[in-house]
Image (cartoon, rainbow, N blue to C red; front, side, top):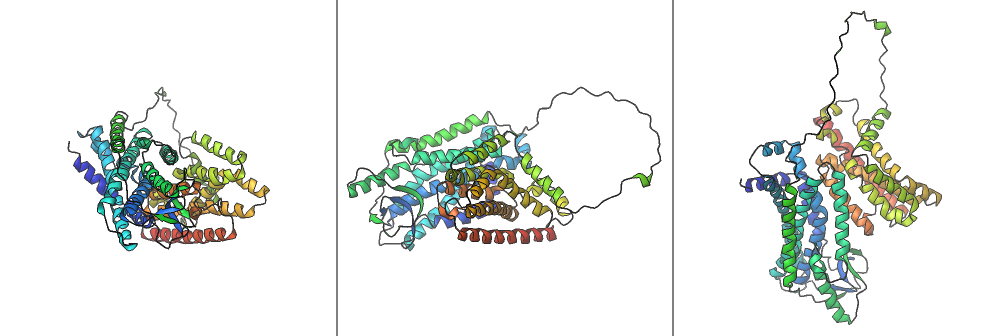
Length: 515
């Protein structure tokens, strides 16, 4: 069967989603920062005290590297879940009755997801060219210096990310949390491996190591140094004005590197072929054990007079506590029970590891493990088609919504309990307040994104970005006081919480009036 209609309609389905539009706008905003303005107080790629002249090669290679990192980071969460969507919309069951093979279907998902990432990449490329002309330092515009790094570095990486999104969904179809956590650790490993200074460029899936090595060698020739002590990829705040300039004219990629990029595409294709043997093809019947049929017993039916006075009297209880208890149970019971073993290890690490490590690394990772629990905090009614019933309950805005928010906050604070106790014992009340405010902030952020988009995808992408940047010690995204402990951070978090709370209240109130 022709694969192109499947690719077309899958692509259009993703493009017409609010999550894609919001991610596209976010990508534009992030792409604007890939190459800092001449007067900016930060740097993205810096070799010791050197940054490149703002010529076409520097713009092209820097934006290609940053796009490879950024779109790899968010792209997986953006395009993941295509098979699950077909299950929910019943399109998958229809496809299963046709002559569409597993290979054709999975490749259509890979290619449509790849095209989504290419669409965002194209917008980023246009933004980069516009910024080049805006920051022009009298260097000529060379389009080839833009296209070559994008074609050899970024595009093969995005194809492999699209493959991983489908393969993870095939092998972990019922374990969304494993997909999220698995890619989190895989991406972290790829980033660590790309920062090593060994010349194994072919094994670098992100494709950034060879360019950074070229820049490092060029700076080493200028400084006549044997080793570059400071080489950074990412956002480094401060000390930008002290940077020196060097002229980077691009590079000629060796044939071995070009072949390795083709190899990553071929490896992705092979993974899809291997995954077809494990694809369920929408046959989701769960196995059930055979139970012995019960023997029916006849009982004599007698008419008994009902004593109305003996019936229990109806009592009205508008307390929020039963709803809070129910929401807590829903959060705790969501997912497999053995996942709580991992949470238990995280709680134990919060109690045993040094306080700084527990606060800066263990806490954000442990909270990120709960992404599947809190991402659908305000959308599960729509997902399970019970929103009309839920909205028809008594005072859903003040009872149901507040119970959902409180339950999620209590869950995150319970997971952080060992750290909270240690901060109290250390009399570090500023850090204690920021951890509590951080839990409230994340819950309100999940509620806001869920209500606005009526989905959980956008929050998963944003939460992953926040967690990853926190682990890499970027102060801007520090929402729990691990990098900066001051009263000003508490004030900023409080303002953000009030703004998010107002947004959640207003939009949900509007939904109640219009539904």
